[in-house]
Image (cartoon, rainbow, N blue to C red):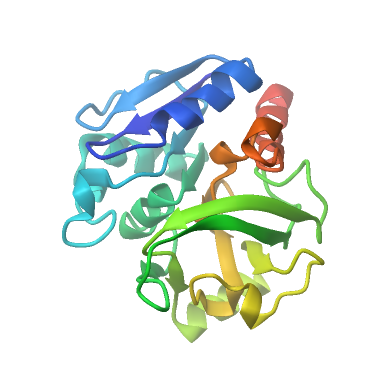
Length: 231
């Protein structure tokens, strides 16, 4: 298997994400430059966190037009696995690969801290190593993580079991006080209709080794590796 990590001007978690695949998963991985449509034959694409193109206009609004994203959209349409983390989630919504939008945090402040997520579905390539209800400790670091979608889109996400993670208490209770950014329904991560694209605001790349305070994020990457190994 081979992973690709996209790199945009302003990406700052590309090496963190690359390190998880190279040093922890021990799998081949390559960087995918924003200005090239060549995906180099990868089997899964990781769109990392950062501030692509400086977050000018809106987060992800310029990155969506890059040559690499045109290829990523075709890759996803063909069933390829795509994980967008933080800024990567924002880019995927701007590119139309995921519904909804990421708005400014409630309170209009940048937030960087550990949070807890409840696994809402184990039925995806990204959550297969988890059980529904599992609570993960994973950090966030964002200014625009307030997920919003229309009532109709929210109903579809719920009905189709496409909400992957919700912000919760350490005990797994989904409460307003556990919501760090005002996100609709405490949503922290969602899947596309084909369940091959996941966008999430928390950083599994920053929580895949115990030295970082938690290794819970590794379970998401392990799920991907397991799926690709079985193909």
